[in-house]
Structure formats: structure tokens, C-alpha cells
Image (cartoon, rainbow, N blue to C red):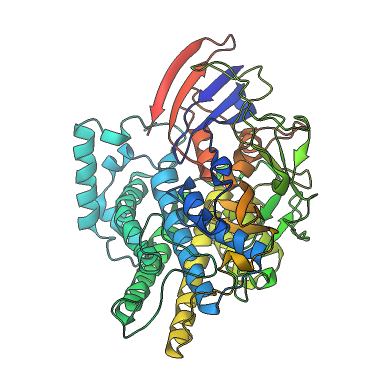
Length: 570
């Protein structure tokens, strides 16, 4: 038995430690430890609820809009504020822009190198690579000249030690792509770096900047007047339209074709990394107001035991549905560590009981993470793009069913293949394809409203705190790129009395609950084979498929806990 310690996991956002027990080349147990304290709940108490979005948005610079959205929705829910339709469309455009950009960045810059061997691309024939790329895409850069230029760049990297790619597991037996497909993927990795900085200009148009664009309780912080220089005018709207068109091209002519090409060589990964059998989605993209989830593009609901014949309703305000445990977390509850609390009653009292840093292992410690452990009706749930697609698929959404069916057909795999590391990775690409289509739809609807001068973007009816009740509580639900995100707020005398965030990685990366049930990361790793203990790329593949945003230094120990090796993987 060998205990592999990955700390920190890299090519993610935040600080994550994973410990995995390997027996006979297969992971038999796993422990996911969040080693970073957030503490924003404490910072928010006593502040003006209308300012909460600006503070919570700083939780993350990768998903740079979603916490602001969740915070605004929580306050609006508490105070009974509805949005003008034009403001709802702009918020949908902002959210869809974030999703599409984030999905592309995740695949190419955080996850692709788990499947793509950069060094092997040096063996490729650029002309053959162009022929392969042109066979499944009309992207104008799929030429021998472009691939030759990229290969020369790789040669320059190799001549100087590969730079940031120096510590990759290049040549690992788990890499299966032919040299030409590796070259195509590396070329598009570089192209995506340039593209992703352009698409977020949409945030700057409607929110003033990126990262951390501005939001506003009751609407959006921008005005539309096609004839006014200081407003969002015709020139700005045309820019947004052109950026959306370019996003459509990149997603459908680069990202999705690359995803399918890579997946075709890794079909065996449809049998590993499935983990939990339960899925949760809060739903997203309201078309008739936030209070009408039946109108959402992505529906709200839960699936248990992979039963796609039934979708359970989800009520975030029901105190018996969503609760957080701390049985394995470095916190304490006034009622004891075995109880669970609904977020409106949530407590954030830190009580570290782990080993004194620096330490080699968390083995033997009952509590091992700064993440709390959320549960839906006491069930561990996976959240994220796969959960969204499955809930939509099971809910009978025709556009989702058609896209999923077409993709499974192209790969020649059954629906069950979705329940895996490969399925999770593919779901993200399919989400991008859906959302870039919706992005075009929202933009067209916005233009129609502008033509008819229906351009109100702010509801000020309850902006003044004198119009608020003495006490109020609300919840803001958002589907972030990584999954189900929610903010719960309690307001008293015009100030925040309590505030709790339950974020996607809290669902997926949390430690065991009071019943010793694994959460998503841990469950997904169990059963995964590891070919080389000193190069555990298999662990990284599955963890990165959830997109917790990390890069990793891997420490290996023998059964007696002796340090064997350390590998830094960029």
C-alpha cells in the first residue's frame, strides 16, 4: 500500500491537497483537503447588503462574475426586487460570456496537458497535422504553415528546458495521442490564449471592466442609448455582436472538434472517475424572471442513483434540504460537530485540529479540511457541467438531448460513458456549444428591445433602505461554470446579519460527512488505476475534470510514511 500526497494541486484556483491510497496499482481510498480559509462570511456581517456583490465577487478572479450575480440575486430575493427584462438579458449575456470563456480556458490551459504530450508534438508532420485538422474543422489557422510555426516554438522551448512545461510527465504511457494530434492541440492551446482575452471585452462593455465587472442590485450598472457617446451605443453593441460571432467560431470550429478528437483516443477513460451517482443543478439563464425556474435554459433539479427517469425538485429555502456538516472539517458548531445546519443558520467558527505545518500526511486525523461538507437531503451530490447536462437531459430539454445524442454517436459510446472523467470533460465542451448558441439568442433579443426603445436596466423601487422590512432573508442561486453556487443572506435593520456561501468546490471537494460518505473528488478517484507512482497523471486527470483550478507538487510516501520523491507538475 502506498499513500500518494498531491499538495498543492496546481492548474486550479485556490489551495487543494489530495491524498490517495494505492494498492496493487489502483486507488482504494482518497482524501480531499481544502487548505485555505475563505472567511468572507465574517467580513460581510454588518455591511450594507447592496455592497455585498462587490466583496463576494473577489472570492475568485477566474469565475469573475458569478459571485456578484449570486449576491445580487440573494438581496433581490430577500427584498422582493424584480429585474427589468432588458437587465435580465444583459445579465444572461454576462453569465454566458463567463461560461464560454471559462470552458475554453479550462480545457486548453488547465486540463488539456493531462491528455496532450507537448514533447511528442516535436515528432509530428505539420502537413499531416493540417490535413487531419482540416478533416474535422474549417478553422482558418489549420494550415501547414501555422503548425510549422508552432512546432518551431516548441523546439525553442525544448532547447531551453521547456520553460513552464519542464516538469510535465511527457512520455508517460498514459498519453495516447499521435504526434499530429498533439501538435494540433498545442497550436490551439496558444490560439486560445489570444482568443480568451478578447471575449471578456463583453464584460467591459456592460460591466465596465474585467476581471470583476460591476453589478447592481435591481439591475445592471449601464444604460443603453444608441445615439449617446457616454452610453452603450450602436458601436458598443456591434462590438459585442462581433465578439459573440468569434466565440461561436472558436467553440464550434476549434474547441469542440479538438475535444472529440482527443476523446476518441481515450475511450477507456469512460470507465473511470465516475464517482458519485447523484447530481445537482440550480438551473440558469432565466427567460421569464429569476422566480420562474421552469423558464430557465438549464433546469433546476436533482438526480439520484443515476436514474435519468426522474428529476427531483430542489428548494434551497427548505431547511431540511441543503445542510452543511463539519464532522471532518476544521470548524466547530455550537450544537456539536455531528449536527448539520442549513446555510441561513450557518456558523463559521474555525477550529484547526490538524497536524502542525509543515506535515507529511493527514493520515489518522478525523478532521482534515477547511471545506465544510454540504449535502442535499443527506445525499452527497456532484455539481458542474455534467450535472447540468444530466438534469437537462433527464428533464427532456430537446436541444440538450439532441446535442448529447449526436456527440455520443460520433464517439460510438453509450449514455453511461457520461458517468466518468471523460464524460465530465466532454460535458464541459457540450455546455460551451449550447451556451454560445444561447449567447447569440440573448444578444438578438437585446437588439430587438433596443430597436423598440425598451431599454430600462434598473428597478429602483426598493433601493432606499427605508422601504425594506426590519428583517428579511433570501437566497441567490447561480450555475457557475464549475457548478451549483448559492449565497444565503439574512438582513436586519438594513445591515447583513448573516451570510453564507456554498460554492461548487465545496460540494465536490469537501471531506467526508458524519456518515463517512465521500464527496465527489474522493469518490471519483477510488478505483482509478495509477501506472507510475512517481508520475500519477491519472489523479490529475480526474481532479482537473472537476476544474477546482490547481497545479501540483506531488509527494510520495511508502507504507511506513517515509518520503520517496517530490514532483512539481506545471
